[in-house]
Length: 584
View (tube, one colour):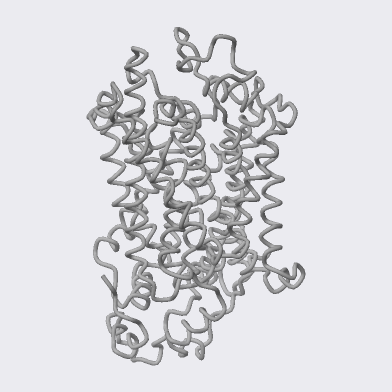
């Protein structure tokens, strides 16, 4: 088992080379974003995804309306922003993907880096299926519409007719079977849409950060145009006020429920991409002195703003629907993808020239999904280039062929999701990848960086890049609040574990075992990496463990200074002469 990182420590000559040499050498070996705006748009595009337009509003709906905003914003401030800043720091300073970065920062937990690559790879094999669902959407008057049953209504409400969008989702899009035991045949229409979705992803990233950086100028900005248009339309509809009031009025009793706080933390982790390795990979293409603190704040604020904006859009629509159909607001919303493919299309029909807005809305969904897909595919490509570039690139001749190979493998692995029973496979994969595995990875990532690598070293990395140490807020969050919060999430998720389900369908036991196997595909690299590192080191077990917990990254560029000189001396003119001052 090879994690691709040698165990030998940096030589004293390399430590004395200085910050300037480190920066010039790294940047000479690795491409960079064409501009700072490209990096910001790429990370915003990755963070702002489909989860913002359906999962966040649903969690608010299911967790006491405005009461959910309090734990959500708390988690953003205490956990989201500090951990995103931390991942940006690791990526930009090391200029490596997550595998090699973790191997240098904490050899004992170097498996965390490979685990993030694996979970991102697994994630992108099924995430593009959502893109294939957006492409064949149509309105009413189709062969799959029930006769005389094309009026508005809501699932789970027997007194109302199904809407055209609901009929499409169930009868035309899914054609779902009775369970995962009956996958049925391929949905050839979705097969073609999946091919098209992967072609779009490939064309956007095959030139690396140079091509991705150009695409995000459209894909990251366009969704806001549609969301604002929907909001302007929705607030003018009858009943919209009731829906918005439901969104912003807290049910205070919900604040005392642990599940609400867990949901808030989970939303922040999933949306910002913590522990997926994507933010580390994208930051590794930054210039050495890029202001990552500013970028982390921009990405976090943009992500939260988009979620709240989508909340106003969806709840104004829900209020309108409750008014039209004389139903309580809490009887309207649908979970998961149903919120995107059922509730949103309902309100599109109220917009002027709705024949134009309907396809624009699904183009928006495509942009939201594709932006997130860029980053997850890039994690795998970055790992292969960092680990096997010398062997693979000469064989494939061009980097474009490497990206094509990764996209093709992901496409093949996504085919089971577009069978007639594919929705059950999709739900199973999503539960054990985006929920179970992610919590474990986040915990070990925080332990590796915050506790073993240590806050002084993180602060030193930031000082060398920005010319200024992080303030007390970040240091307290990294040292205490973030690790304890993630630990509480991990323990609670184990205690409150519930088997996956799709609607009223309960998965068989063998499917649960398959799901746990999917989780272990990524998690297993953490103990494997630790065992390999301890085994390869020399000395007693205690000595091997101590060596495994010692970082190999070059931080001691001032090794020739007197031993008594502490970290504050690293702000001397000699160190800072090659680092531009922090810009505001």
